[in-house]
Image 1 (cartoon, rainbow, N blue to C red):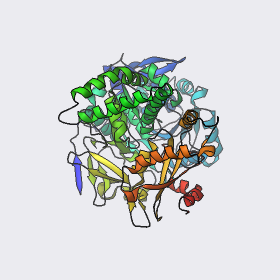
Image 2 (image 1 turned 180 degrees about the vertical axis):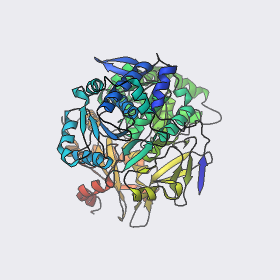
Image 3 (image 1 turned 30 degrees about the horizontal axis):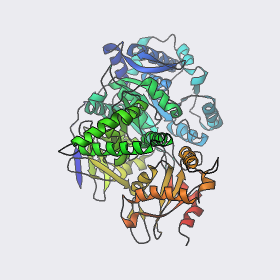
Length: 598
């Protein structure tokens, strides 16, 4: 058994709650822009004192309409300015926020609202309102529904017009550090989502220590962050609260389809994303270079960036020749890539899945360091992350200051610290199992090196055992295969089978580019190309890259290209993009069988 801890850098206020942050900001930084808001397509600043006034106005409306301390208020919306406003307004009314993914089905909405006992819900649009209405008959506790796109914020503001500021301040002070701030429902990969109770202490410990450890990334008045992750996800909430805590300017983007344009206009200094975002940036840049006849130059630049980054981790550092090549490519290639990311940023934080060493070195090599981290809903997002000044690419970093990471005898990662959830809402049995012996059992398998850097190698419940008795951790191979531009999703199979196989879906955007570049018929799809020799050879290269990370017994011997995507609507992935392996295995049982037919 091995464990590692770091001393806390931040002391959680015993009698405080998260609403203290916006009052402090208004008092200490009244004219500092703490949020950006889109008005008529242009970013406008919202100062700390303006934000406090708007939060108070909405909180008054919640109080006037009967929201009481401890009540659960659900929030179902895409990531936008109003999400942050409403979140802090709910807390200022003394209530508890219950996030609901904007992609949730009516059945999922019913479960989350019913299980949490939500007395009110704020939805974004008519579609969300319709989902709530369709199940409202089974939600006896639900009283009020407001809709953002139908002036719900103004409606609340007008409802509370006669409530004095003193009433809001008194109500905001009712919650203490150990009271619930939010109930965040897990993705539910193996059953009904469980509600993780995260307290104000959880967020203070998480964000306070993270901001202190990454202080150069959170300079008030200088730094900014663009949030395009789902605010309903705990990682998105970490961004929200950390930005307000620092404070630095926070912008929210509801649709990543226009992300390049949003990055260019907001120009953040810090980006928080998932590996797929950074893979897309790399793959899009490479595809653009190839289309312009500059593919070889881009590939040379990429190899130089990776070599430069790797040399930074050595005692000698980059050689003179490597520094010269790097300088040349910085002017030809790297500067343009940084411009795509907004032009001002030097750092990003990545979580949700492994980034991979290749991309980690590539981005550091172009002057845009991606700090990889690791966490779960139960750990209030990041429980480990790479420090800005001592990054170890290929790991997810050291423990959050003030917390402990332990590796159990069977390899499971165990956690301890103030940032952890207090339990699952209405589920004592699951709570007792997850928090056995005072440690949170993550279900992930990992290792700690001598400096306390954590590497995640797989999921305990996802370990496959082949017919030959070989244990296989799917995530290692899947993440490497998925890094290829053509691959959308990959699921490794082989439990009880003679060898390891894989189901693969293709990225529709890059498939179209690949088909055009390889003179395939116009409008070709995965269905028409899945047996094409050139396409199979390209996918095989992606599989070979994944196999390079594992032993021969763990490697993928055969794969099947699917003609459809794994989608949330079909029940194959969660809102946070995790595979529901049992559902995929059931729906594609015939494809799996085909892998093992002679």
